[in-house]
Image (tube, rainbow, N blue to C red; front, side, top):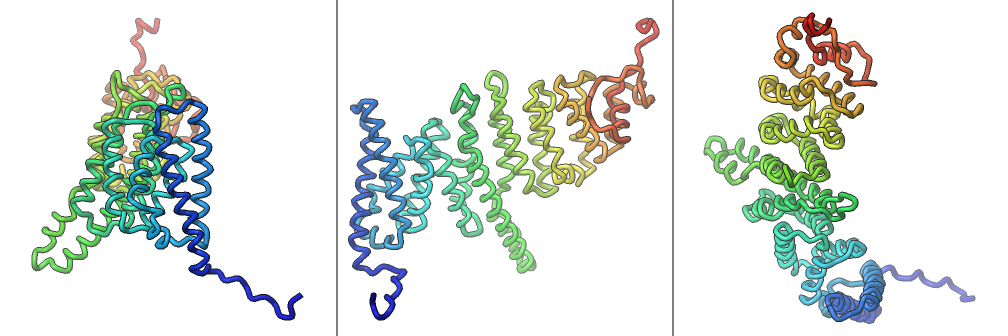
Length: 426
């Protein structure tokens, strides 16, 4: 054994050790590019294509491990030609013909490339925008929209405030049209194409809304600082349009109706609206409620239990109920149509869960504005039903619902119908 202990190994490899490592990585990147291009060949048989895919998976795994090794140097690899223009072009082209198994690698590679090689950022932003725009016009389930949107969400978080005209054009012409596809990724499972990338799409929308909120904060500060000079109006005009209004209007425009009805997509759109409501304030909520209210009423009146449960679950959120109660002067605008849809002309929904949720929603609506609630119930059932607290023929609604005094009061007041005339009773 040596007389003195060996020195600890260095945590940072020497440049001499990095050179052969970088040369191997350059060869791996070149092999990866050739494998991607080889998959586009139409002369290969099915067995040859399967073998190429298996080989590609191994190459991607080794490539990703090399990038995470301490011997890897991004600047050295870029200078050696590992991340040249051909690699970037091939990567973006492969994103349009990829398989689901490659999504993680492609997302990590695209994110790494944007973060570590700043010289390609402008090119990547341009190609990402072009790819998403083409997808919104010509949907294709092989395009890796989800991984690209995940990377785009982080890019948006890095935008400097205020949002420029280019940023807003990206939002209105590229991001919002991604709600348009109404086809199915898998018809057998009734999986809409929108669902394959809906979560990262919402992530991008929330990133834009967060940036707009920062813009408004800066605008308010500048307005207070220069109120005497009248600078506030100019700043406000630069801050721009309300993005939340554009989102809600887009949801209404792409809502599937008639022969294009798609229950699974409607549930996704309701979920997205629920996510948007979570970041709304009172004025924005009431400004946008009138836009989407017809769709909410239509879903409440639907016989589809999935759709009814999803739209009624909005009232489970205390924030949603608080926003509805924030301006009681608007209650006469949204309470009557919602109540008419809930009461269904005296014919309760066939699903027991929906009936129970209906009673809970009616209780929440009654706390918002009891006077409008009672007037709407009286108009729905007639003057005779409004005078009576309890009718002779109560409808079998809300089975299994809470038996509390408030629930019983709502049931007896709303779900009771007038007594039949004596001749019919006889």
